[in-house]
Image 1 (cartoon, rainbow, N blue to C red):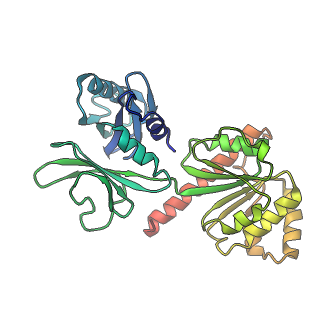
Image 2: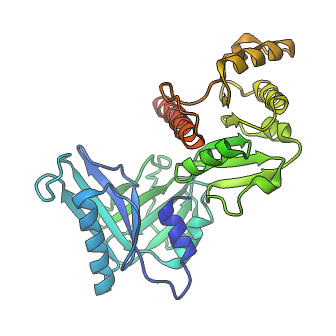
Image 3: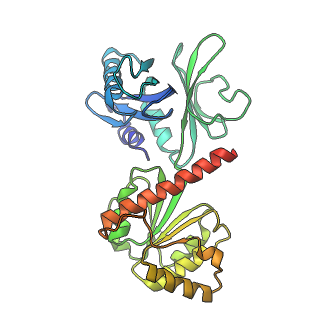
Length: 339
């Protein structure tokens, strides 16, 4: 869960301090963040970011001025070069809205599902929440933001014929799922490294006592004696990291993962050296794994050039590698029109 949403959901009671949600609604040219980037602001704190620098400072000041005045919505245009002195030089439009606790709670309940929000920037204070297909789940009657052409792809500003403006805001759930086998020092470091990244993590080990009492919001713990079954049942396109306390278990998991029908859609990383890879390749061939599937096994793991063996160093190298894999997938889907 993104930190702005986690903060909104955890502090959404009737006595909670009012907060303003600031959203990058539209951009032109070179800008620090994309449409849909958000930060949450109250009288003394902020969560998330719309890009930092003078733009973010002005955004925070504007949000706090709204809280002081009672204003509930605003749309402002910021030319980054002329008005703010930022070298990227593009233009950012920021939408400001006082975030109601009921709306924040509903969003937090949908952290694993894409949602759309429609927020009136002019006129009556209309607000609605929709599922990924455009079906209204909550809120006011609003104009058709799909324009009869299916749901759009990104956050933007919609203008009605009478000039009324709406923020059409895509709140995207993390689409990437990592299944991490092993709750040792490296596994724990990887979980920490991924805590604020756009992914869901299923953390698996048979030793329940190794899991910390508190885990990040994007992590689900699975204590099981049959981890291979979880690997077999995972959805196509899952990423797998195997780093258990047992080479025998690592091998069983590798076999289960490489025999999956969707192995070409998955990503599989195995902790270990080149020597371990050669040993596993030999044993897995004997169990019927062909060369093409063995080629899909990434071992050693981590981006090349980082040689440190400390758990935190390995975690950074692996997190960077996963981000490269996931961003490449996103680019491929975008180029082929796959949602």
